[in-house]
Amino acid sequence: MTKNKSKPKKPLSVRKLASVWELSKKSFDLIINNYKIFLGIALIYGLLTLVLVKGFSGGLNVSTLKTDLNQVFSGNFAALASGLGVFVVMIGSAGSNSTAASSPYQLVIAIVTSLAVIWSLRQVLANKKFRLRDTYYKSMYPLIPFILVLAIVSLQLIPLMIGSTIYGMVVSYGIAVSIIERIIWVIVFLGLATLTIYWLSSSLFALYIVTLPDMTPIKALRSAKELVTGYRWQVIRKVIALPVILLAAAIVVMLPVIVILTPLAQWVFFLLTSLVLVAINTYMYLLYRELMNE
Image (tube, rainbow, N blue to C red; front, side, top):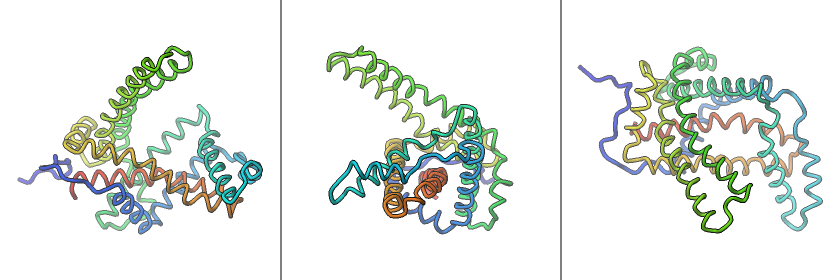
C-alpha cells in the first residue's frame, strides 16, 4: 500500500537551498507568467481593502509633499532625494486610514486572499487550468484549520512583543543609564526576538501544509517542524531577506513614478501594496516547495 503523499516528509539529508535571488526570480517569473490570475487576485484584494478598510478619502497628497521636499533638497540629486523622501512618507502612512473597527475586515480579507493565492499556486505548479473565480470557490475548504494555525503563529509573536515593550519602556523612562545596562536590555530583547523567529521559521510553513487535504492544525505544525529540521537557519536568513527584497523592489518601481509621473504615484503605490500579499505567499510557498525538494 502506498503512503499518503499529502503529508510533507522530512528531508533525508541536509542540502543547500535555493538562494534568495533564485527564489525571488522564480517568484517574479511565476507571477508574471500567470499575471491574469495573480493580478486579478491582487486587484480584488485592493478593492476590498479600499471599500472595507481604507475608504475613499483623499489620503496623502503626493504632489504637494514633493513640492515641499523640493524646497529642502538641492544639487544634482535633489529630485531623487525628494522622491525618496516622498516614498518614505508613503511607507509610513500606509494603513493610516484604517481604524480599530476596520481591522477585523483587514484580517478576513488577508486570510481569504492568502488561501486564494496558495490554492492558485498549487494549481499553477501542477499545470492545471482554472479560472479566477475558481480561486475563491475552491480554496476556502481549509479556512478553519488555516485560522487555527494562524492563531498559534500569533501566539508565537508574544515573546517579540514583550521584548520590544520592555525595551521601549527601559529607553523611554531612562531605566537603563549606563552602557552595560543598555547592553543587557538589548540582549534580553534579542533573546526574546530570537525565540519568536525560531518558532516562526517552522510554523509559517504550517500555514501552507494545513491547506492540504485531510490535514489538521496539529499535524501541520508537526510536519512543518520536521520539514525545517537541518534547514532552520537557512530558512531564517531567507525569510528575513524577504522584506528587504520587497522594499528594494518598491523603491526601484516608485522612484521614477514619483519623480516623473507624480499624479500617478498614489495609485501605483496602492497597486504595489495590493501585490505584496501575493508576492509574500508566492516566495514562501516556493521556499516550502524547495524544502520538499519537489
